[in-house]
Length: 411
Image (cartoon, rainbow, N blue to C red):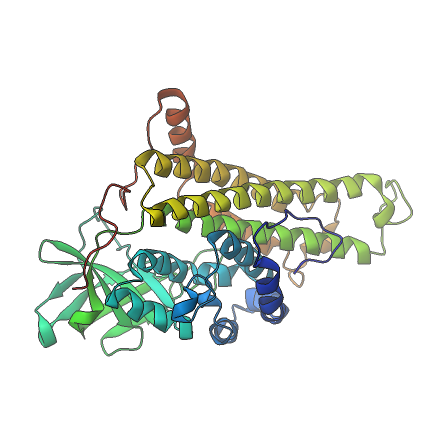
């Protein structure tokens, strides 16, 4: 994706180069409109369709079910390249890849195969878990009532990232005293998706409201929200880190291109051209080094997630393995977020006032990075890392435990 004058961390998987060669033309096409979309708030329907048609969402689907069967390590490396093209697109697919990881441990059940085959053909899934207002973990105002053909879904969700563009939405709800996941087509009667996300960054992700008013649902679309894959929290966070890493790469590339093309310099500069000014070159070098460090942290944590997944599927993963994975991801989160935020601020040093032009939209890198880095505040991560280092305390993981059942029969 990035020109060869940049040296980014090597991806040590066997299939990465082949899959990257397959998807890079798609990424290149998506990148063409990224600045214009950001400046004019042009919703990326066409870009999402390119990803759907190329079956990018099938990366983790096993080959026997029609997917590419790749590793988490390769997935996060490719998401980094997609985010380099347009970070909105990587975040739009966050809920999709999270859902796939939840289903993968159940790939040998009829329920699991049903959804994985749909994803293999190109269907994309969005999340609907968080509710507006006051809510408690494990208890939702969104409800499934009735049974059989009389089942109905009612409620409202927020942060339904990507639902505006995608095919299905996986909704967490209560059914009586039970917690369930409901799979609903985004265009079914009674489903209303509103693009009301007003963040100053990642503004095209449609991370807004979804409402469900007496939506008819089938029993086959309802599944107990238990036995979720124990690596899911790490996966969701790593998608953010891959997105940040891609933002950093794009920022470094556009900074270098801007300076390579710059014809003016300063009277008090250190060279006849900006490209030869050692102080300005040092600014660029520092930016690139910070991005390299962020990429390295992300890729190391990605490899750790694959090692844990291998243990999980082999039935040998322990609670300590899960805790160590979470801590490694938290460490990568602090390192990646800090370095990318620093890099996307430092890049303006020495660029001159013309770099502030809205036409170039260089500010989008900081805005988008700040938005991604604001998910799951870093202050909690530092405390949890410290508690593990000093007291050996495992970080809390309310979403899924290794010791919880990983499979159950389809409802």
